[in-house]
Length: 334
Image 1 (tube, one colour):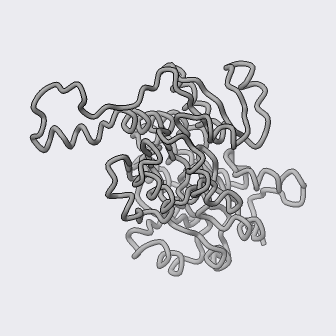
Image 2 (image 1 turned 180 degrees about the vertical axis):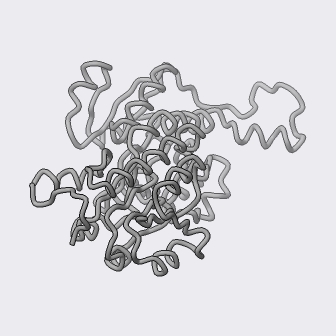
C-alpha cells in the first residue's frame, strides 16, 4: 500500500477514508511531523497543516513524495519553489471555507465596534449595576465605509455581509474587478485612498514576501483615528508591534485579529490592550467547513496517487502545467 503521512489528526471520516486505501501514518503518533518525515522518507503523500513549515530540505529528503495536500487555503508554510522543482504536486482547500471566514471577519468587526469582549468581562466581574447612558459606547456601522484589501472570494463575501449592515464598500485589488464593480456597485480605489477614507479596513490578501508588513507604522498613521483594523488573512501582512503601538496610543478605535505575525506567539503589548479582540486562528473553524476541507485533502491524495490531476492545485502548479513541460502520471516523478 502507498504510504501517506497525516501531520495531525482531523476529521475521523477523512482519517478512515485514508486508512482504507493507504498505509496511513499520523505524525502526532510519531513524535511530530519533523520526526515522522525522517522516519518515513518513503511516503508518497503528505497532508500538511498551515502550522507546520515544510521547507525545501524536507521536500528534497522525501524521494518518493508526489503530493502535499495542504489543509488550508493559504500555503505559505510550504517551500513551493522546491516542490515545483521536484515535481511534487501541491494542493489547497479554496472556496469551501469562504463563508466561515467571512462570518468570522464580521464577528470580529461587530465585537470591536460594539466592545463586546469588554462588555462580557464587565458583567462577569460583577461591575454591572444597571443601564448607563455612557457605558462602553461603540462605533456605528450603518453608513460607515468598509475598505476591503484583497477582493477575492473571502473579501467579496465579507463585503456582502457588511452591506447588509448598511455599510458602504470600497476595495483595493491588484487587478481590475469590473464584474464586481458593476454587479454590486463596490468602488475600486487606490490603496492610499482606501487607507485614508475607510472607517473599517478588512484585510483579505494571500501572503507573499512582497506584501510582508504591508500594514506598517506609516500605513496605520494614515488611517482615521477612529478606524477599525480587521485581519483574518495572514499575520505577516501586518507589523504587529506597530499595530500594538497605534492601539495603545488610541490612534485607532480598535483591531480584531485572527492571525499573528509569529503565530502562535502574540505581541505582549497587543495581548494586554482592551481595544484589541484576539482569536486563535478560527477563520475556518466550523465543524462543517473543517470536515469539507479534510475531505478535499483526501480527494487530492487519491487523485494524485492514482496518476490523475488533483482538482485543487495551487496557482503556481496550474501555471506550470500550462507550459506542457510536466504531465501528471501514475508514475513517480524524478
